[in-house]
Structures are given as C-alpha cells and as structure tokens.
Amino acid sequence: MSQITDNTAEQVENDMLMLDMLDRFLKTEVKPYVHALEKADEYPSEIVEKMKEMGLFGCLIDTEYGGLGLSARTYARIVERMAAVWMSLSGIVNSHLIMAMTVQRNGTAAQKAHFLPRFATGELRGGIGLTEPDCGTDLQAIRTVARRENGHYVVNGTKMWITNSLYGNCIALLVKTDPSAQPRHKGMSLLLAEKGPGFEVSRKLEKLGYKGIDTCELRFDNYRVPGERLIGGVEGRGLQQILGGLELGRINVAARGLGIAVAALDASVAYSQLRKTFGKPICEHQAIQLKLGEMATRVHASRLLIDAAAQAYDRGERCDMEAGMAKYFATEAGMENSAEAMRIHGAYGYSKEFEIERLYRDAPLLVIGEGTNELQRMIIAKQLIERNPA
Image 1 (cartoon, rainbow, N blue to C red):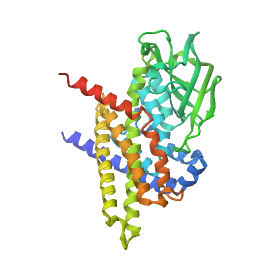
Image 2: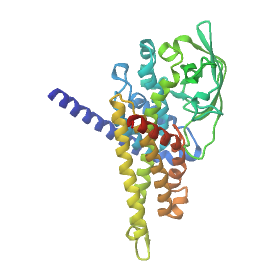
Image 3: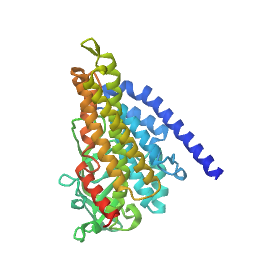
Image 4: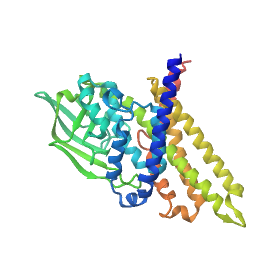
C-alpha cells in the first residue's frame, strides 16, 4: 500500500513540475509572440522546436519508448493551458499524439519499436489522415483506396483538413483496402504514411481562426507504402483503431474549449474591474455579474467532465460517452464564454488589439472538429441506452 502511495505522490509531484515548466514556457516563449504569429498566419517553427526539447510530442508515449508516459488527465491540463494562451499549439500536439497512441495501442511490436521513439522526440511528427472532400463525420464513406501490390500498398485518393501535414512528415492514413466489403468498415485499414513520391500537399487551407497551424489538402497518386506499415498487421481494423484514438482527440478538443473558456473568463474578470460606467466598475452591475457567474460555472463544469473522461481513458475503459460529453459541453462553453467576453469588453472585444476577437474566431472550430457536437449528442444517447437496458 505504501508503495502505491509513494508512486502516486511521486507522479503528482512530477506532473506539477511539468505543468510549472509549461506555464513558464507559455509565459515567456509563446505569449509575447502570439499576436504577430497569428496575424501573419505564420507557422511557429521556433516554438515547435522548443516543444520537442520539452518532450511534449512524447508526453503520452510510454517511457520504454522514450516518452514521458504522462496520464491523459495530466495531458488534458497541458492542453487547457496551451489553448488558453494560443489554441493552435494544442492542435500541433494533438493530431501527432492521436497517431502515436494509435500505434502504441494497436501497432505490432516492430512498429512500436521503430516509430514510437521517433514520435516521442518529434523527429517524425504528423497527424491523422481521415477526412476527405466529400466525407467528414461519416468516415465509412472515404474513397481513398490502397491496393496491395508486390509487398506494398499503392494509394490513390484525396484527404482534406489534415493538420500537421505541411510541416509534419508522417500521418496515420485511413484507406479502403477492400472497397467492396460489407459492412463498409471491414474494408478499412490504417497505414503509417511517411512523405515520399506520390504524397503531395496540394494546398494549405485558409481558415477563419486557428491560424499558424498547417491545415492542408493532400493528394495521393500511386503513392507506395511498405506492407509492414499496415498498423497492427491485419487489414480491416482501421476504423476501430482510429475511433479509439478519437476518444483521446475528443478529450483534447474538450480541453481546448476549456482553455478558451478560461481565457475569456479571466480577461473578463480583470477588465470588468477596470472599466467604469455610471460611476462604478462594470463588475458591480448586475448584468455583468450574471454573465461572469454563468461563465465561471461553465468553466468548472467543463473541467469536471474532462477529468472524468480522462480518468476513464487512463483506466483503459471505453469512454466514448464520457469523451463525447466533455467535448460537447466544454466546446460549447468555449463558444459561449468567448461571445460573452466580447460583449463585456464592448468595442475593445471587437478590436484585434485584444485577444478576445481571436478567442471568438478560434472557438467555432471546436464544435465541428473531432466529430460535430450534433454527433456527440447522438453518441451520448446511444451509449446511455446501451448501458441502461430496460
């Protein structure tokens, strides 16, 4: 019992040291440069290199492969802090770690030994290639095909909205290895696709917010992937493999929503004490107090939902309902808090000189990405019924 207690205490201390280091990094190496980088839509190359040095690209990867071996619970706190300063940084880490954890959970021993140490250092960095021009929520409708030929897979197709694809060098690519399979998911597989001939980044996509990060369209023209790069070594398991990874992705996106909600609340609490109307600070007006009270409650509730989902993930339990609840509620909290912050700040909230308008532009992505919030509610309802049969 004392051994467990000692290990737990040591882990808590290590987690706190990591979070303290991250806070210092965000304060000194990120926050002063966010406005200029975001305005220019410039990829933060120097910041990414420092993130590699800190081990952030391996924070969830097991220590035996050179990672930090952190819990999803601690990872969610890391993402919250990142998103509160600049949401784009959390996306650079998230897509990469979904790919890495898909390999760690489903890869062969050889795949883990070859890829995970390189993922942990950021030497190989990338994300997941799922979405296509005519396919988002319904992943079984993908059209990218991989045909087996002489020990390789020959890939043809197009992917859309792929994060980390311009400056990254590897993606977990969802393909149809058997386009005629029924049900459709039995013909879907995941390949570890490193850049090479036939792998083309056709264009970088312009976005309302989420600036600085590379989000691109990809084209595959007779692109060849060695057969041993089939994740898990068995065809037809790709959809199940990536859906497990999306549980982590939804916890991440929930934590991003929380980060935006926190930043909007903190800025509003501070501004409301400085701004005066009718002879007193606006925080003394009931209309503003109602907004602040709702914003603070959203933050606290979001944090509890995220923590519950992360703990379920850490226990190895199926947590699509918990992750869906966290993702749905926390991202809506980010949307609502950013809008309320703009109202509290008035004209200053609409100005690019303050961070509020950036939060307001970044937040909408979160209710769409990693499965729309409409889909999350359907997942929650289906799991609720499945877990509570009449």
